[in-house]
Length: 102
View 1 (cartoon, one colour):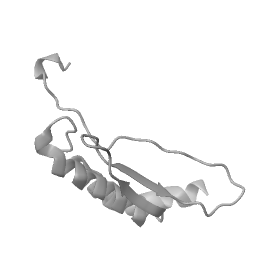
View 2 (view 1 turned 90 degrees about the vertical axis):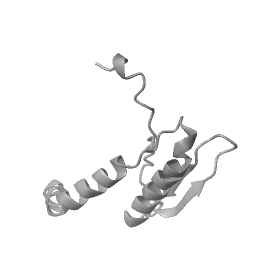
View 3 (view 1 turned 30 degrees about the vertical axis):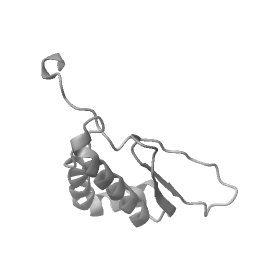
View 4 (view 1 turned 90 degrees about the horizontal axis):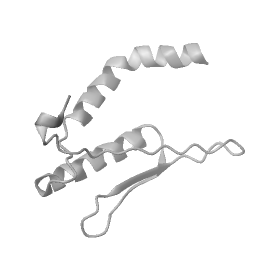
């Protein structure tokens, strides 16, 4: 299994890197209203990636007023197997104040 997984990674490495670069270029700065459309774009990117991975029931769940959307996807096709929950942020914080970065 490990060899098969590694072989798959090696065969798709460039595609994975290009996808990651595309995702990282989205200025999804959650605290700046000017980037509201970018937040939505990042959510759509994540949802599309989940669909391409084979996730089912992928949806973008809208937040209330000033909340950013949540991206949800599931794959429940392994009865009797443990459940794995992954949580992550697709939005980022602004770099300001720059002088505090080390």
